Length: 593
Image (cartoon, rainbow, N blue to C red; front, side, top):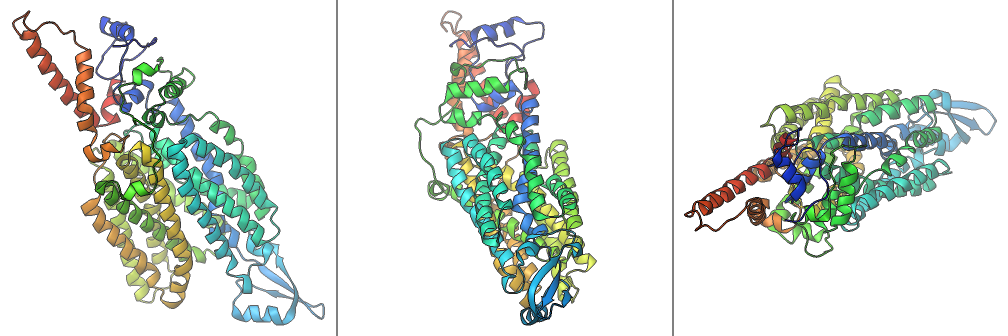
């Protein structure tokens, strides 16, 4: 076995040392330790220490800007004020919002100049600034479609960049550029210029959400992975958005303060490291050692360990660099194809349910849009915390139960809403409000978190970012479908706005029951061959080699064959122990820390 550089501190799993420095621990430091899978490496540097705390904080902070750009046109950007109509005889009249066909006809016939009355609305929006009413009333929806189309393209591009060039490159370049495009939007003079800026924002956000999510999922192990997952929820971001809108009162000031507040976090992102898991899988062992040594440095996780490439040479990795694409999600392995279809259906359903909330009861917030945005964040806040608590305290509460439970609650809520709407209850009735909020909050938090957890585990490292890009692209497709069809459904067949997502929820529920596997506690895959054969089958030779390297082998005839029998027994016991460690992922490993 090759020697490692100096390594002080808690030994890796399977080697128990003591603070006082036992002989066993001394041997480990002297002879080195060969790691055979990445979970051991994570356990050695602490899978959730100060470095992971820092990255989670940065993601939470940056989500304020992401939410502010992405969801601005959902509520704050479309507030309509009252209008001051200047007529040909220089007299004025007030036109109250919202404008309808009759008011638009009056404006066309009598108004030579139309001016928004700022004091009549709590926030001076894009609708007021660019007069997006009457003939231009479809422009807010068009702006959203343009922005979401940019996000769709960005997700696809970001997925391929993340898996081929690295997660960090796509993430940091996108985060740096989105500050510039967000500032550019402030200077827009009409809705066309604003749409161009939002397309660029959407494209960059699509890259950011895919690469950052993949990177954060690979920074830690199974035991703690729900925590960075929850950081991509936006409840705190919505509450901060509401506060900024309340203080700014104007859409341009809103974006000025949004960028002033969030721009400094880019400095924090400069301290982010490339995913060491991706580097090892790609065979870049020297770079992986640099990253791991930085994460384990005393300024971060204080692991008191220094890796060299020799330590990582037994971890399975790609033999040659290969360019993967969406094609490989569907046409290289039947198991991967079924999982991809399952995940796409899940994300499309998630998107429809979320959009139904915005385009049904979301239109009835009236003069309380800022409070509506704030409460939207408040209602979402408790769900991720509850999910993390249950995952930690209830071992049997896995990914599939979370997936099925969240879908079941959503299906029951939508079924009750369909009954109420069929009985001629108005959409703004309190019972429909409550049921829609419950369904949407469970969908936006619990269901989304389960999709992310399952996706992380079911796709190998070499194609994981592309898998997330595929999922998010269908999420954006779902938003576009909702923008195009929910509003016409509300006007022509109101209950249909709930029946369509309900059908999708039930379909996803049935498919999930039969096709969605349980993935809690299972280690992540790294190579495409592991999709077909699994990690245990691939690790058996490595496990035997490592156990053999830890024993001193003598001639079996020298002691009547006792050494050979003992050696063989230890090999098979060791292989079984390694299988148990692998089957529990980081949970078992972290116990040695």
